[in-house]
Each structure stands twice: as structure tokens, then as C-alpha cells.
Image 1 (cartoon, helix red, strand yellow):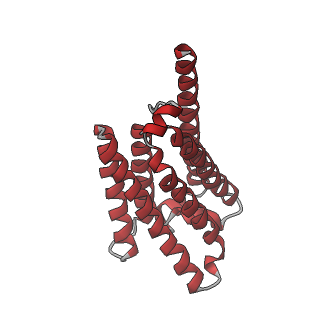
Image 2: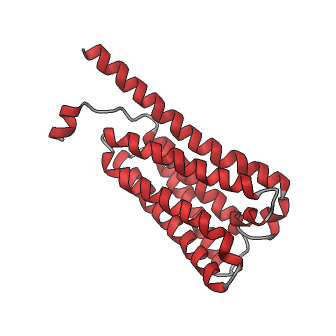
Image 3: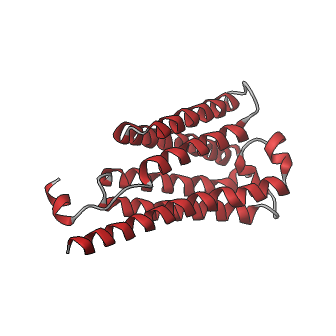
Length: 203
């Protein structure tokens, strides 16, 4: 019985790792192709959302964020059976906000109102991700996760300075912040083990 439980736990951990890896590969892979197709966005046009402006990159941009949110949602459901089950809803919240940012990308050129909605949703996404990352770091206390949080903070600061017109590095701020968040997620979630139902009841 114990052996069967260990096998089941190993299977669940393997699936969690696959979903987590897929969420990151399917986020950065299409965006890298977008950067190659439209290098001007990287250096001159502002944030990642500008990939949604072009027929060549819009499908890849959509795939990147839908796939990332979808697999992170699967990760969130998986951690519900681990010691970090209290982080399930915050991680789902990250997915929801990410999808809202994606949807708000396309009407933002219709009026300043839609543009402001998109911009503020982007700020909310950074904030929700940073708060979740900070909580995970405090709970798991992994050195690499701490490094990831520092990188995420640096990216958020660059993005804030861009929003305040102090610099024009919004794209790089978003990329750096996203990479930092990815490091935190991988460092804190990739080695989780599912817990027995009895343990969950008494925890």
C-alpha cells in the first residue's frame, strides 16, 4: 500500500513538473518568435502587448498567454493536493488576470479608456504575481526563489519607471519581471509532493 502511495505521489509530482515546464516553454517560445519577427517592438514600441498589433505576431502572442494561463491553472489545481494548497486560489487569480490583460490588448486602440484599462490591468498583474511570489518565498525559503523574487522586483521597477516616463524600457521590464516570477514558481513548486488524504484532513 505504501509503495502504491509513493508511486502515485511520484506520478502526480511528475505531472505537476510537466505542466509547470509547459507553461513556461509555451510562454517564452512563441514570444521569442515574435521578437524575431518584429524586433522593432523590442526596442522602440513599448511593451509585449504590441505583438498583438500585427497579423504576423498576434496569433503567437495569443497562444503564448492562453497556453501559459491554461497550464498554470493545471498547476494550481495540482498544488491543491500538496502542503501549498492555500496558494491554489492566488495562482488561479494570476491566470485570470493574465487572460484579462490579453483580452484588453485588442480594444485598447479604440479609446483612451480602453488603453487605461489595459495599462491598469497590467499593473494589477505585476502586483498579484509579485505578492504571490513573495508569499511563496516566505513559505518555502529557497535561495533561488529569493533570487527570482529580486529579479522580479527589478523588472517591476523598470516597468514602473517606464510607466512614469522616466525611461522607455517597458518591454525589458516585463521580460525581466516575468523571468523572475518563473524562477520563483519553478524553485518553489517543481519538487512538491502530494499529501495523503488523511494528512490533508488533519493538517
